[in-house]
Length: 85
Image (cartoon, rainbow, N blue to C red; front, side):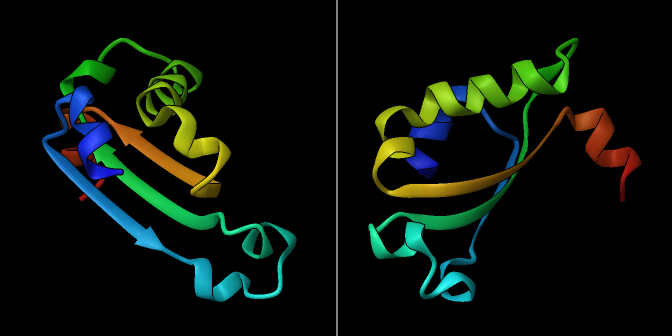
């Protein structure tokens, strides 16, 4: 995931694997994991949340069909990340 998300030139990235919390879930049975993503990039400037999420999904490509069953995304600009500290 980190390699693919590098296309968004992140200044900060954190990926948390919550798959163990979803053991027995249908998505877990198919092999897809549950993840939380925190990503900070200048590329998100001027973009609404939906467009930011689309950029993340595009970067991950086919991983969203196999390796990732569920993905929670927090996609911020550097200014937004600083304000949230």
